[in-house]
Amino acid sequence: RVKPEEWKYVWGGIEPTEEILSHLEALNRKGKIRKVWITPELPFIVYLTAGFFIAVLYGDFISAIVFA
Image (tube, rainbow, N blue to C red; front, side, top):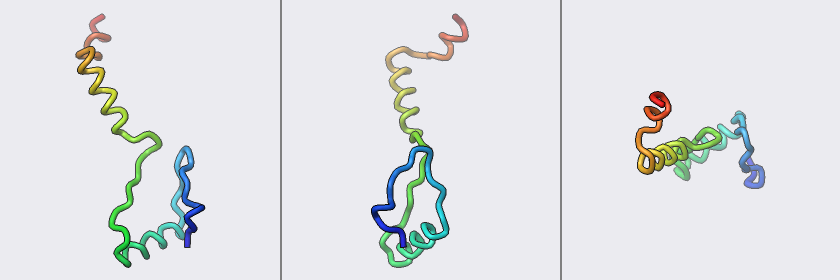
């Protein structure tokens, strides 16, 4: 069993071990969890939000760079 004090974020991610996977499967069988959210180091929503604000405040940023 993976102890809660071992659950921590590691920059660069962690490699799931068989122990972690079996613990998650056991929790799933008990109905305590249904999904596990896995993301890269920086969630994609950050890039989407930045792109949205650039588009709202500046317009077509790529065309401005290409045709400059």
